[in-house]
Image (cartoon, rainbow, N blue to C red; front, side, top):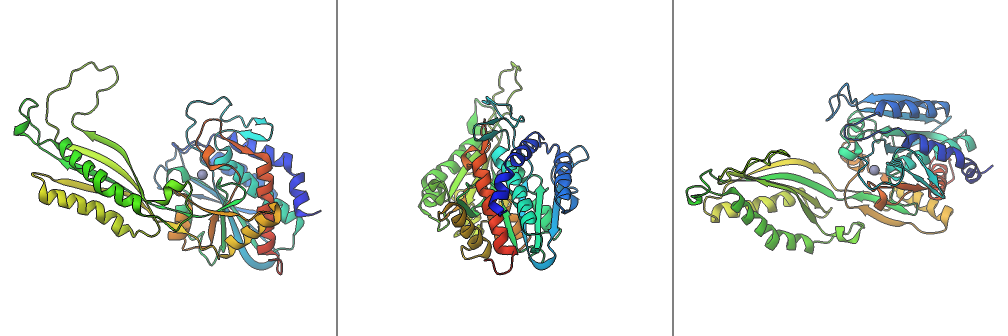
Length: 425
Ligand SMILES: [Zn+2]
């Protein structure tokens, strides 16, 4: 047999595996069923000859005895020395939401599609990497090096209970792992080189409470925030829109710097539903916003922070009674793997060999676990490559294409051949 015929022959197995994974409702939040899915992966990969290791991210955000953050790392050594290729998939899925016509945890198959929450993001990718690795091992039992497959927690909430924790424990040490492929749903003919950075902060403007009928005796924090938002509109947004990155970010709009204002709150707290109280009349003494600033590889984090601080400081110097607080909530560094890196070149050739096309190189507007492999693991040779359409992620009636999974499995299998069989690249 050839690798391709083995993968084609595993079609029913691939469908059943994807369905089984979808049927384990690993919702995050709260971080449910991680042990169940690790147990499933453990049995499957042990049967395929892998050594498995369970790793709990003790005391990571959200980790508790009710919702333990379990991760599974499986490793299969070949009989000869060589490099290690690691496939990393997150096992968590986001909430179901409204608008479904299929059972979100049913794994329904219709035509060439498997439906369910997590079908494309990213249980289909996880199943694809397992089928590819199993076919490769069966076809080339005497391979050199090692294959690792991990199923990790909490990617959808930042990855601190998953890849970040594993990286902090040395699992992505470049001495141990040389190539990382993350089968996120970027399409079977695209290679994702990395992602933009993120900076999240809360800004508070401060005022002084007084009677609403005599606002001149107080100081309205909401009006101060209005002044901040006005400066964002007239200065910061135009400046961000003018910056363009060399990163191949998709969609096109995300090739500039962007900022979302996640929330705004000032004054009296919202009444509980059903509470018919009328508002008391007060001048608000505090107003808060949360900003979600996505930045480019070309922008130093210090500049991203600095331009917001400078704008606030300028208001403080020039606007009567203006005072503010700034609380940083989280930072994600941008990550971008060089196109000439071995994993990029290898997967690129494998895509060409399988589908006769050259891959499109893309970068993600948001982020995924590559940030932890880069910053904590210090491992640069990492990409996202997997079946499925990114636009379907987190949507109702999410699905993954069966033919797409088969093609991606061939690409992954051929990549293993190029990296783990001497003289094959
Ligand atoms: Zn994902």
